[in-house]
Length: 212
Image (cartoon, rainbow, N blue to C red; front, side, top):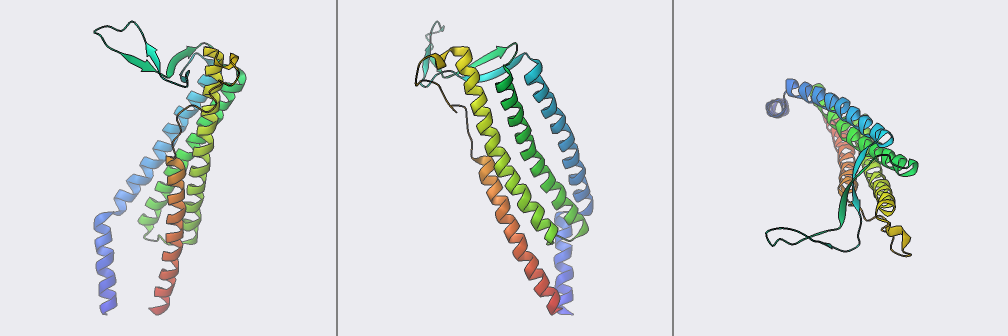
């Protein structure tokens, strides 16, 4: 009886934090976000082939001084915002794949949110499917986010070589000089670890069910 009371109290506390209605709203919001971001991603990918396209290009290894500024101001730059009427086929393809992989990472996160909300709604979290999906989402996010950034950097530096002519000087091509962040990789690893925690929680749940 004491165990049953304690269990009921814990379930009541959980319901106060995330209700069934809240879980359903999260599911709807994540589904809508998936549709909207996918539509925007597809539109952006199509734009790489249709043109014109505005890109932030890494045009210099070191800071370049900006001249002719007023008010005695001084400035420098290493990146050029360039509008290109029509991208060459290879950079356009690389940018398209980069955008697709980045969107895949976004969908992985939204899928995870949808799954967790669904499991909260059904009051069953520690299942084999939950563990598998969380781990898969983490792996997809880490791989897609990293590869997408590499492809994006490669494409931008190739376009920068064409626009600024830096590739004409031997040894001065700015390979992969675009911005790179480890956030997708780290978040993906964290999700894989969360999957391991869920697996451990599932074992504890089974042990607890065996004692009741």
